Image 1 (tube, rainbow, N blue to C red):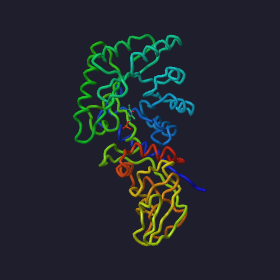
Image 2 (cartoon, protein in one colour; image 1 turned 120 degrees about the vertical axis):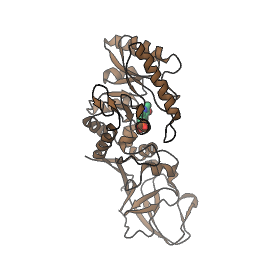
Image 3 (spheres, rainbow, N blue to C red; image 1 turned 135 degrees about the horizontal axis):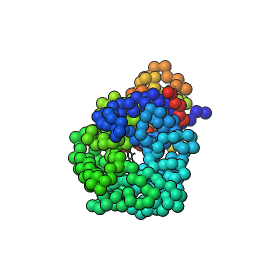
Image 4 (cartoon, protein in one colour; image 1 turned 90 degrees about the vertical axis):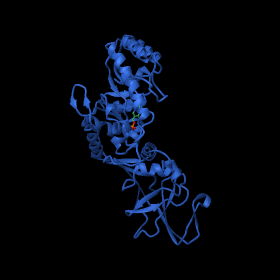
Length: 367
Ligand SMILES: *Cc1c(COP(=O)(O)O)cnc(C)c1O
């Protein structure tokens, strides 16, 4: 029996979104006009399937891919992805050499470890160094950061190719802190330039790419916008959603007025109702927070979630939708339902919607 959800991944939309981002104001070092793009494909490309997404992005022209962990990079290499891969968080030096990766370094300690490994192997390895300008997460921090970067650059076997940072808070009309972070980052870059060190610099993820042209620097490091979603609620970016998720109705039932639906009887039919059961629940990444809040599209019409989302099943109120039958499609994401909208209903962000729903879907790719 059918269960779970299907994701249709539109690689053409992905290519179109990349083109839009590349045409933002900016300049690729040594290549002239256009923004350089480091494409973030961590978490299985936000639930879209990292292998196919990476291959298409590399073909369309990105400077590099970025993943969180070495294990993700290993999968890409095993599947024949040739692009440079930046590893954002994993400092284990082993895979970096074996898989030709570009690790991001977050401390002097890990830089020294990498340098020892490089010498042992008689190799030199390119790295990007991350500095913490206000995220309070990974990266070198404190007033001595410039000296530490210079020290890393002087280690044998380690070549500092890139310097990066990450915005912690940025939104429309909320650019103050991002500007402070950018200032910090730029003054660090100047200090390094004074020492003759001029690494490739990047600080903007999707939000910075859309809102802060002066922060485009040598590249933007984006995920969400490539997948056609915006980090902001009012989405006027013209980006096209890459993922469309649907399931099918496995049971239709007529209920009288006053009958309860699902756990805790949080939904009581207000009229004679037609309720559709779909084989998707929070175990499939359809968030329990959608209970009585989310909706699907059935036959092009809104079908609100009735009652609690269960582990493997969800009920939709399809009363009044004409001609509904068992086996019909129910679209969970797409057909006008955006990740941003679902995120708003569930009190989360589009990233969690994509990784939850897409991460557990059977995927079909269209080119
Ligand atoms: C995930 C991530 C990104 C991409 O963020 P988007 O908002 O999806 O563009 C960029 N940089 C770092 C360090 C990240 O962890």
